[in-house]
Image 1 (cartoon, rainbow, N blue to C red):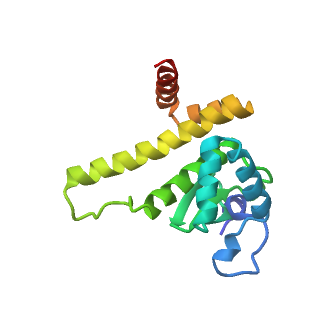
Image 2 (image 1 turned 180 degrees about the horizontal axis):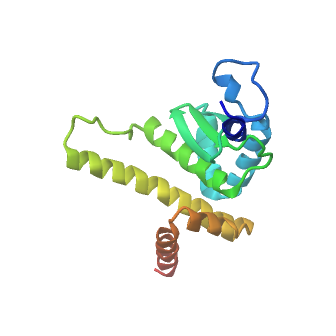
Image 3 (image 1 turned 90 degrees about the vertical axis):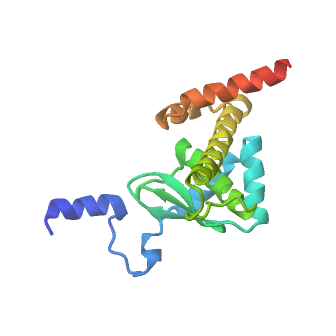
Length: 182
């Protein structure tokens, strides 16, 4: 393997040679700090606080693994995996939104609203998946809105824009304003 390829791998997965050989070899060195700080920020929103309560009540566990990109996803209904660059020491705001969405995804499954059986009617499957995704996006918008308005974390809007959801976010805000004026 060339030196350049080796450096690219180190950038993605960390610079140290792992002494562990299983999945724990990908464990992030700052996992505990990242998880706690991400939860702290998420908990500043009413929706995020509710989702963290769900995670606690259902015993959902969090882990952070090394990866070049930031994301969060439910490995199963009781384990959420967050990915972060090996050199990251503080959570990013997109990580906060990703954690909230991942918890909501796990909650959907726990409530019996999982991914439909692939052998069913394709239109019904597509509709169910669309409803699940819109529900998660609605929760994401709620978290962002609450962090902006209740905690003053206005930079979260930049993450909504980067995610490509600014129009959905604006529709969410307009819906809230319409409901408040009704």
